Image (cartoon, rainbow, N blue to C red; front, side, top):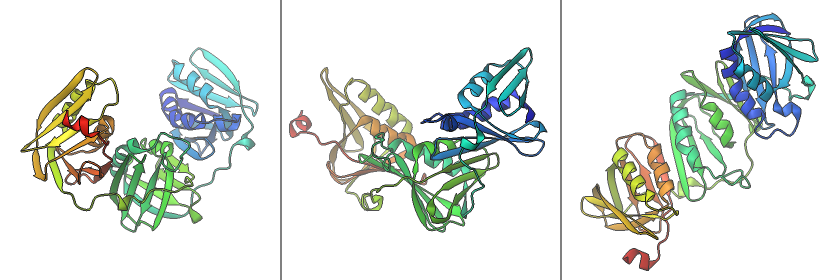
Length: 366
């Protein structure tokens, strides 16, 4: 195998395969990056953690066709530090030699047979706008659980219908839901690893093709130059449709950016994870937070509807929901201080359901 490739292009292309390959590398093959030549002008770099595989195409001048499995982290580290424009690679089956400017080096290659077999994904396909998908992933992923012992909640549920794709994430304290239109959708539902969806954020084309293999064994996100294939996560996922409030008794409409800044100011006064209390009043919302140093409060202008209410939230969870909304105004709707509240906006597509924090009666009266 022999090829020449741009140092900058290779450095960028190696990021995702190396990250995936080293996420939970238990063997050299899993920690390696597979380099395959495709014709005279292209290479495909593949990395896998056993559950998720990322394949990235990069332009190259291929003098001799071939395939090689190399230590991913080492290759990425050396490539990043090289100071020439082009790198020449030559492999004799035992070692991969690299030449760039005045640099010459070699590394041992790994047995190609130890790398999982990779074929082109086949199955039911649907097409989604990449900007919608990227936005949806960024909106729901913060609600994923960080408890790896509950892999279903640490992932994102993907629900497909003939014309809609919905992403749902929850850690049992909040649920983020985002729907978008698709072309040629199929009726299916899978829980996908959070890490796999984060790799999809690298797409650069206008459209993403999602492929569901037969019996749901794998889900692939395909664009020119990038393939992300992952195995669905086993486990049960909460029925989010039963948790989203259908109607509410109290509501507040606030301007998003100024409200985020106000929540950050008030919550910054506590070094603890003290809940922030929101009181819906007459054309205003009062924010309060009690800490060892005393009580912090700020009055914020709002359009109030329905019954007066005081409700408390984990400040960071509240901010995560506000960050996810991409409109000037935000709606906060509630059905009392102990039932799930809904954060949404007009036309953004995100529904963020947040469980309140229970406050002792004395704390409310303080």
